[in-house]
Length: 300
Ligand SMILES: NC(=O)c1ccc[n+]([C@@H]2O[C@H](COP(=O)([O-])OP(=O)(O)OC[C@H]3O[C@@H](n4cnc5c(N)ncnc54)[C@H](O)[C@@H]3O)[C@@H](O)[C@H]2O)c1
Image 1 (cartoon, helix red, strand yellow):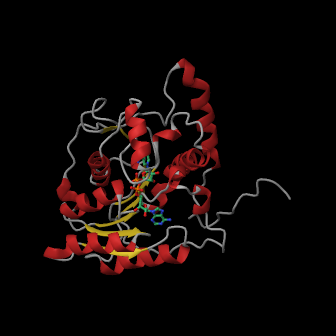
Image 2 (image 1 turned 90 degrees about the vertical axis):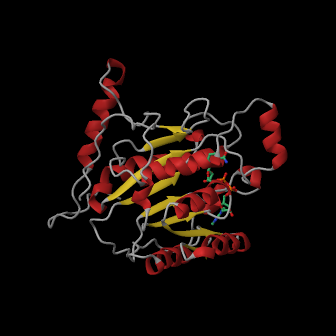
């Protein structure tokens, strides 16, 4: 089944219970899967019958989780991988492809991440070496395939002090808005999940307590997994409604909802932005056409 071009059709109904049977036998990659919400996703997708390839820097924890999950038959494989390294990422994709039941990669959850409170800089995630080359994933076209980016609520609100983190999560959101317009060509659904505060090892226990003491409301890791499951198992959640937010259960009892903020509507306030958005779309041409030529936007 080919994927339609992106068109806004209204927010996703977040109250629909995911059909977990649809993930059975699928090959799912989860980065940053040895801890936090990534680990919860690994466990949840494996429990639903997916073949999970999970990658992380933390080999000891990754191997322990792999052994635990595979105690009753192989349903997961851990790959030590630093997502900043191109070759290690290739190895992760190749492992998922070769070890999975259908020699495929169906769902990718790009979850690995760090924050400044971990004492590092997200700028370091950029690979400064080498030219990027298109990976040859060579996957059968009529399979449902889905790429989910773990963003953050900070790409929708102001977050003073979080310069690098906020810039990268906004960058990822911008990437989603571009990718969703041409993803029909590759037949890969594009989605962006923006978790609210979630308790995890991304920040210290002391800092977490400091936040709780100041009334910060946290969401549940299992609801992040629920959100990923909902997107992964519903082919209609494509680019139609690319955004899911993880919300505290006091806001949405499912723990997530579509905040519906990625499009312009038929209102007088939105008219100019909607028109501008439409004019922006004229730059898209089908690059698979025989006579396609890359446009030169500006002479050097
Ligand atoms: N916890 C929150 O409040 C929150 C809120 C919004 C978004 N997020 C996002 O959710 C994602 C997961 O965060 P979490 O809270 O579960 O964090 P976590 O620290 O509990 O887990 C993150 C995992 O990613 C791994 N990792 C980090 N850098 C890596 C690299 N270069 N290569 C491979 N693995 C790497 C770590 O080893 C760790 O196991 C991140 O992208 C984070 O930005 C978290």
